[in-house]
Image (cartoon, rainbow, N blue to C red; front, top):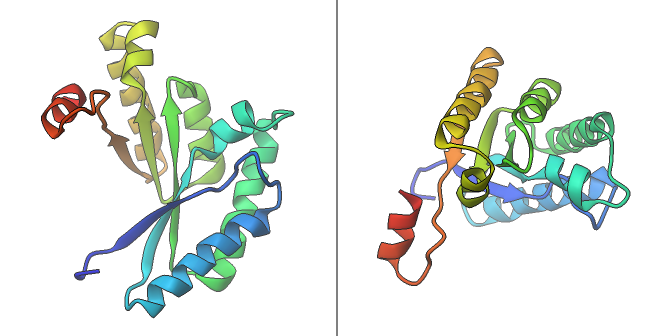
Length: 168
């Protein structure tokens, strides 16, 4: 681990299981493996759990059910691994700002990372709307003392140069 904190991405909710123990077990097993390799997991980022609950699971789950499920996954993880921080990633604009802020308030994650689909954002509204929306989400995080990050990635993956240029 070179002395750096290890963070991993893991499902918190997907279409293939409604059982919180399935998700918590994956995380605690990852923590066991990391320890066996001489490091520990500092943080886990649930990969788009609200998107899974609203848009992938059939039938879709209501907001309160998703919040309760994620809270139970976190409780189960912390029963075995109390030091692991838990946050989440959600896509924007797939999940709107009001829902992002409500999910941050309901779940109280250690951190939140917005994964911006820049092409969809560009098609949906002007750049100023994206900037205002990101500012609103950042303010929601600040109000709850939740660390905020933006996932930046490119679309042109032919070379490293085109990837970086498209992410800029």
